[in-house]
Structure formats: C-alpha cells, structure tokens
Image (cartoon, one colour):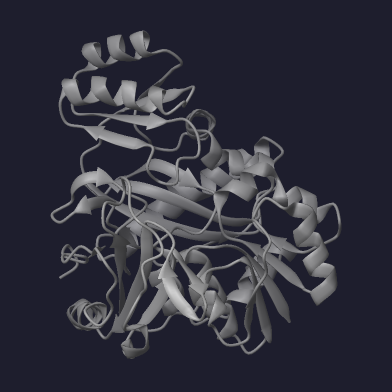
Length: 416
C-alpha cells in the first residue's frame, strides 16, 4: 500500500520510517516532508503545504495513495480529516470537532470536568487585569497557559508571583485572546499516547519528554529537547489507572458529545508521588519527540494500527513491542527556543550508524542537508536497558555537527 504522511517534522520522519519498515507498505509520500524524508528510500517529498487540502486530494489521486496519516495538530484543527472523509479518502487523525481537545485548553478543561477526569484546578481569562488579580489571590507557583495552538511553547510555569504576572503580559502580547491559569501540580510528567477507533483504546508504552531547554530541567519551555521510553515512572498499576481514569472517560465523553474520535489521543500527565495521574493537557496527535522513542519500540505494523482506527476494527489488533529501551536527544539550533539561524550545513550524518537520525528542522539544498528550524534533529538509539541506550545515543550525537548546535547532555537522567 501507499501512504501519504502530512507534516514536516521529526514526528513525521519517524512515522514515515516506521511505515516503511512494514511489509505492507511499498511507498511513502510526505507533504511537505524535510531533508530526512527526502533521503529516505522509497519515500518522496511533495511540495504541498499541510493546509493545502485540495493539493493533498490531488496527490492522493495522482499517486493512487491508500491512506493519509496526519502528523501535526494544525491541519487537524482546521478540519483536514473531515475534508478527506467527505471525499472518501481514508485518513488517520480525528475530525475537527475532536481536535478541539488540543486546539482549545478551555474546551479540553470543560471536557475533563464533564468526564470527571483528574486535572488541575483552573480559571479562564480574556483580560490581563482579572488574570493578575487571580494570580495575586492564588499565589505561586502557578501555571499560565495560552488557550490555543502554540507548538508546545505556550505554557509558562511561574515559580514566583512576579514571574506569573510577567507571563500574563508576555502571552497576551503574543496575541493570544484567552489564558488558562492552573494550579501547580507536584509530581513527575509522563506522556501516554493511545490509538483509538472511537470505541477501543490501545495505549502505547509511556514516554517521558524533557520540555525545558536547559540541563537539570531549567530554562524556557520548548517543543521538547529529548525523550525516553518506556518510562519506568509509569508502572503497570499506574498504566491501568491512566486507561480507566483518563483515556476511557475522555473517549466516552467525546462520544457523549457526538464526536467520533479516531486516531491518536495523547495524554500529557503529572503523576503524583502517590501514583495518581492528573491530566496536564490532551493532544490530538502523536507527540514530538515522544514518537521518536515509542515507534522504534513498536513491533506491530503501524499501517495496520492506523487502518484499524479508520475502519473501527481496533479490537482485532494486538500491540506487540520490542524489548529494551529507547532514548532520543534533540540537536537544536543555537538560540532556540528564541531567535536562531537557518541554512547551516549539517555534517556527520553518514557517520551515525548505531542510531536513527530523525530530521525535524532540516531541508535538502543542492544535495546538502541544512538546518531549517529550531529543533534540527532527534537522534534515537535503542539499547537492552537505559544505560546502554543513553551511552549509545550520546556517542552518535557527537558524530554530528552544525554551527551553534546545542543539545542537553542529561536526557534520560531520571531513567538511569
């Protein structure tokens, strides 16, 4: 079969790579793809943007594509799944109404309250004065979130009231119309992605992301500086609680609202010291960089899982996993998540033999791979255990270089 992957990041490279490892998949197309997908065997980039729905339909017809797999949240929130379904094209990803679970934090919070899903106490504000009054009343630490898509960076964890008040101005100045202010939850974060066909839910192994740009989890929030899986924090007991207290009520509440949700449901969680899972956020797609550690461990063909979600036959599929651990280290452009340069030549990729170099912010120019984003590469290594995977990934990361390359040297420190 032929699959079109919509998107251009590290997540999409990982999806394309995993699909091509399936015995069922002969060809993958990426719209628009990146420098990594451009050099992947049996993979072809198409110069179509993620919001060009008509162009995607044309590509499906021209190349006789069997399935469209949508990577990013933006086209899902714009209704790409609805658009393709109306034209009888098989698409993996939720409809626009379901994608609201990520597109609006207020909407998601209401859904959690309705479904009695454990989450932080929160309040919503459209103006700075009332938001600041609330912060002065509640105190710090406190969490300020932009109510909208912000590429993983619209969250500020303020440890002091002064930081919180400044965060309100910062996010309103970025033209977000609504802020959600939440209580600060104590615990450790984990990400659980689950396949669902709207009836059956199949959770994947838990991963742990490293959101902060600096070592020791310091500095600004980013889209993610690295990840590892399976996260030891999520024990079988906690995993069962996540399924019954978070994922199942979420799908049941979506169904109650008349939303047929098929695709990935991603729960960003805070696990308390007592083992209780609280939802920090829901996303409507594969996580990035969690996908880069979860999919290399997946033994079940990815296309079979995607089609089972589309066709509502997920109850007939069994998840199978490879043994061992996976660790991904993100190589970022100097200055990220603030201003950074593009167009820097990347050297040493051909030397990476014991890991997979998933491309995120790259493009191919005159047969040279150059930087084209803040998070440039996600280098993933597998090992029998975390110590082996961590040692291997850092050996491989050191083989790659581009001007002002930056990466955290402590990815996986909680898993050691």
